[in-house]
Image (cartoon, rainbow, N blue to C red; front, side, top):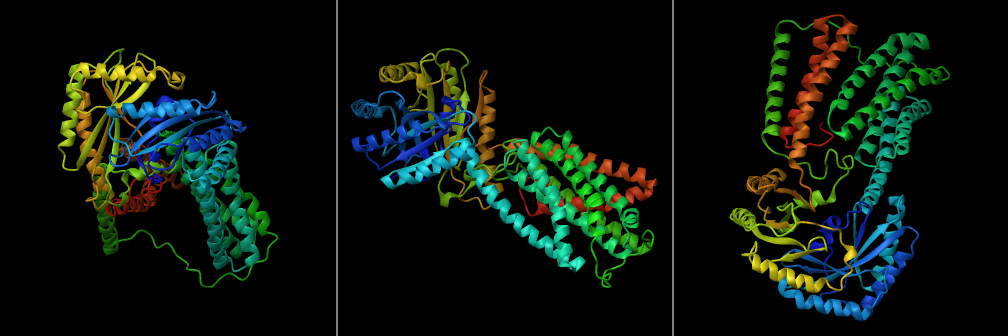
Length: 599
């Protein structure tokens, strides 16, 4: 059998170019290095019929895929439309025809069938995911290796993983915060009551996210836990004061205003996320504002009623009592200023490192499915035991009907030679998406990259046209122009850190950007592994330049209104500002990647 990490197992994004169905799923079915036997084809027929009969699935297509494990490339060819009458004789004839056309491609040592599955509309990802998992377990017993890919299945897997993590983290959080409550309150029943009261806003927020159909992802897990922590801090502060006074109104007068002002200050800070261009961060900011309001409501309105019916032990004698002694003077003031200056210098160096170097967070993108870990991105920078990494690039070079101009081919040839000259690049394979004026699309690989002349392209088109005569062309989406695809293999095994791996990628990307900009009306995009370095870096700079200043400015203005003193407001803001700078500096110095956590 072909290995699970075979290139075609992870590189099926090209089919989303041909079949632009967001929820489409691809089942890669392989047997061994030989062509499918008649017996295997009959089993695949039964597979497709079983899928087609499922009430969850709308349409099933079958596609033959040839793979080359040595060169880490692939070639797709349409094989059969399952919903039509299945003919084993026709299948064998198609496979023989593929062998005849092998001269167009590299030598192949493997073959697989791709079942292209289109689920019915409004089918939940969990239902189709559970069904396909059971389908895979059943047919894997028939000596088939089955790999499932697709956005819908990935969403199902992420959902399952996040739910498991959410349950695990929630139980651990309940245990740890329960111990914190008991440490301060010294009463197990009251600690349990307070724990439930603090957990209610998190449950409400989780329910609201579910009602709004927000996908279960990193943000969905982060929000309830963050609200749980905020509610715990407020609850302990209120309970310790209530232990001293024993009176609800007196406690509200003593600490209620402090809790309310603290919550408003926090809300003002997070409200600045609403001004960012990122939809995910806007959702995060709005959800946090609502969640903090729920936490304050549960503490200032629900908690006093609960505590009036509880009995506390005597006030703890071990609590530290801190008395205000005025502003620091003399040597103390000098030491504080020196400490703050060092922190600011430390943070500035860290911020400079962030902004002066492209950096990439493995597995996260700010607007792509709300910080869902992207397996393709992780694989893109994984070491893979020293194997070569692959970078796929589509270049749109022709916006009209017909073939690409010879001048454009010359420019692409120069581009490939410049990239190949890099020490890190091992090989480049160029494919041309050949379109017969809207009749279909076929990936063809040429011996010289790109083709030397239009005559060679014409010969290729003739072979492709002969091959297409009896194919189900309605499998394809109309394309009206020719497009070039580069598959670049580069070696990053010598890079010691993720940052060094990124620099290797950027070195290739700079050549691509410079060359494509010189081609008339040409654009490019990556496929298969979305390496969105610039987007992440721009997002981080956007956050620093917009949200961070507004965050501190809003807190300063709010403190000025409440304290009615410019000096006190500034002194109130200063420790928080330097603590934030220190945190950013520490993350940068230890080369922690940009993510939602350190933002």
